[in-house]
Length: 209
Image 1 (tube, helix red, strand yellow):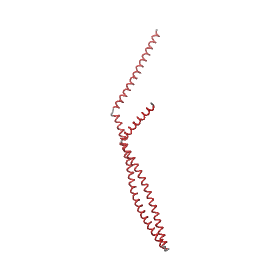
Image 2 (tube, rainbow, N blue to C red):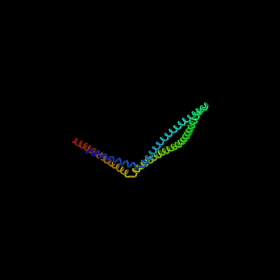
Image 3 (tube, rainbow, N blue to C red):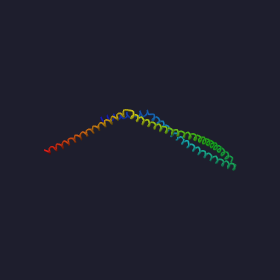
Image 4 (cartoon, rainbow, N blue to C red):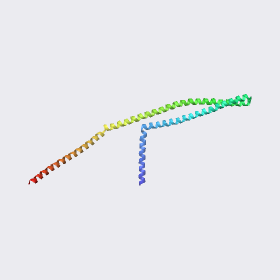
């Protein structure tokens, strides 16, 4: 039996929470909060991608430095081979020089292009964060307006419904009760005073006999 009541209670509680969730989901502010959370997640994801692109830019620069270093190295080697009349070494050094120079040019163009793209996406990223901040401010405004509306609604319910009439009747009931108590006190006091006076009078009569 206890298990039955436990399951019944759990079912009722679950149904109650489901109704609360459904009611909450219908509230426009809930949808706005979810939209802002989605925007926050998107901003966070894009920030990670931008950071990754900066890492790629660093790799471009690293490879470019290596290629330029090899260009300078092969230039010196080609000059040395030419001075030593090593035709075969001159040819091999020159071929590799051209190869590294082509690679350096390609990497330089890629790094410049990536730098320009980074500048563009950074600008858009700042704009996106500003838009998100605007959403925060707008939500704050709406929350304030909603709260003020609820306050006014509550006040109107008190001022323009039966609550005041009921409260006035409650006060009247209390006032009537107090008046009855006061009357009882006054009556008892008068009776007590009257009895005391007659007792004094009866005492005088008995003494005079």
